Image: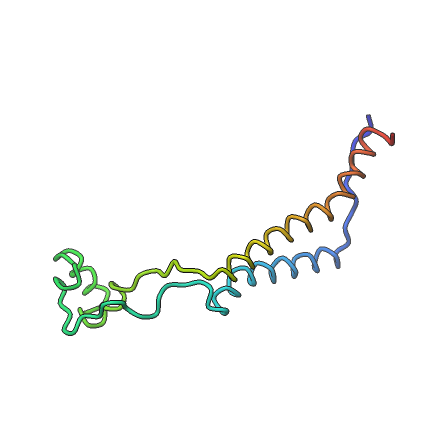
Length: 126
């Protein structure tokens, strides 16, 4: 059986591949944030009028750590009481399903010819 050697890729193609992968990575990380589809809540559901560490549910050790970071009860109020918003819309869910299915189809289509070449080279044409 002949030893398989992969086809060589040019430097320009490698550079284009790297640029595309970086753009896709940045897009996957930041586009949901820019579209407001990810991230925590911006407001606090039950704001306290005159917050104290006790009213915020913090014990003495936690209060000391917040104070070491430069927070007082009023400035740590939003940080402590803000909660993640796990709600989503049907449109966002459908969009994500479509993206995942299209990615899977694209992956299969692009790799099919490469798989056939490797199988043909390894085991011969039938």
